[in-house]
Length: 283
Image (cartoon, rainbow, N blue to C red):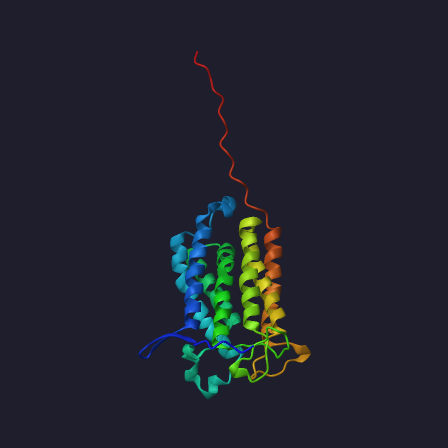
């Protein structure tokens, strides 16, 4: 199957190019913001403690998270995948429009942003983290679809009937691994977390939803790494490991710890109802 003739630029206005990849980030952040705002408004999801933040605080937090995603994602790509440009062409580091963002770097950037915001505003970082991670698959879905439209991060060669010939990857049909990631890290992980927040009531247990996100992403990313073509400029790692697998390993450990910790922690006691006073008859 030939790769569809997508133009990575949606609209060109003079020197200004609006790219699908940029729109994916905008859509992920805006929809995620509104989703989290809806979560904190639904007090029944949070139990006796109530929501971890107000909608106004979530509005402020989004700016912190946006900076964390962009700065962390770009620096993560540089340090994890292309450290050579630090010496060879350091000006390239700030040229985000040339592409090159790392999910694991973006995650670190968001973690720093959330910790800083919660410390500044005296909020419970575990519970705020639960709200933020519940919406993260939305951005992952749009990001992976944008990777497919750009014809980048393609998969390994295959003879599967749905294989695609990517113009930049040579004549061999390849796995559309970007769409695998969109389905697993985006759609399926979102449904799992939706069940956790609205079905299982796990927002009442601090850090469990965040742990499920980290664990779920790491497992799905590791699965897809077996179908995704490793970056050519990276060295070959032993045992068939890839950089994505190794960067996901700490997320497995962290996710399991958060789930274990949150399930062991006692639930907040339900608010006691005021006693009913017996009616007394008038003398």
